[in-house]
Length: 193
Image (tube, rainbow, N blue to C red; front, side, top):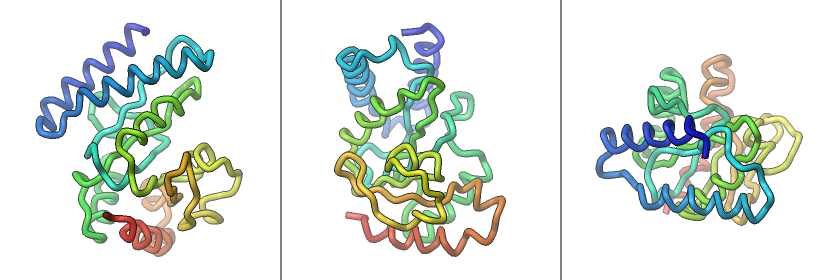
């Protein structure tokens, strides 16, 4: 594994241990990384991922939210501050909070996101995967349609119910999306165990 990846992973674990001591799931993250290495070897994949794909949040969450934005190791965030604030307000409106969910991303330079993402969903076993934006939706549900055509509909990804909605950044840029996102999130609420 490339030294910069090791350094980023180490930094991530240190931050997680400091910020979320009660929610620090080193054993499962270790399983994800180990399984990823095995899967990549068995599938003749490139030697290393350009960037680790690690999410944050509740290990046994009903919901995995997936962004196309990379994890920022300096801030321990996937979403920008403004997008995160909006996202938290939307979650609160459906009686959830940021601590109830798992947030990850599919951003890799070389495109080998699937190995680690699949390990994440197999450990968490969510009721619903929520894709932020068409880039993530296109990758997971294998469609070329836009978010406006597919938002709010349930698709399957490796047997898991999957929904595509607008990214919080898109809502910040276009207030007219709020009503559609609200309808999507009302549907998301129905998947809570």
